[in-house]
Each structure stands twice: as structure tokens, then as C-alpha cells.
Image (cartoon, rainbow, N blue to C red; front, side):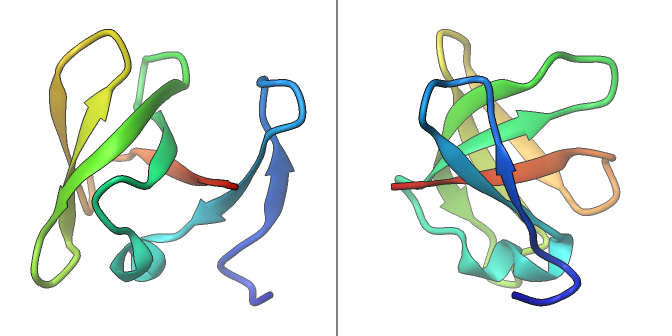
Length: 83
């Protein structure tokens, strides 16, 4: 584990996640389950849909909502759910 990642407990019973810094977005793949914390919003669970070639942005389907663009510099905090 390096300085850019840490394990955290999330609200779901028994679920764990890993905080991903922007540098680690390169490790996201379509189908990965994530928790997205956007500025001014509660944490939202979703599924990665697509990741930009340089991993500076990715699309995520937020559960029960729509497809959302997350990009470097938008202030979002991303946790990847561990299986």
C-alpha cells in the first residue's frame, strides 16, 4: 500500500473499498463498482462504464440515476469497492 491508497469501511455491511487518487484511476475498468463523493452530494454507488485513454476522466452509471462524467479536477473522491 502506498501513500495514495488506503482501505476504508463504507456504509454497506461488510463492504470494503480502496480510496483511489487521480493517479490510480488508470486501474479502473468498465464494470468496476465504485463509490463517488461529489462536491455537495452524498456518497453514491455506481458502476464504471468507460475510462478515458489517459484515465483523466471516466464515466460512471450512478445506481438509480444516470451516467455521470467524473474528471480530474472536479473535486470528486473515488473509492473502488473490493470484492
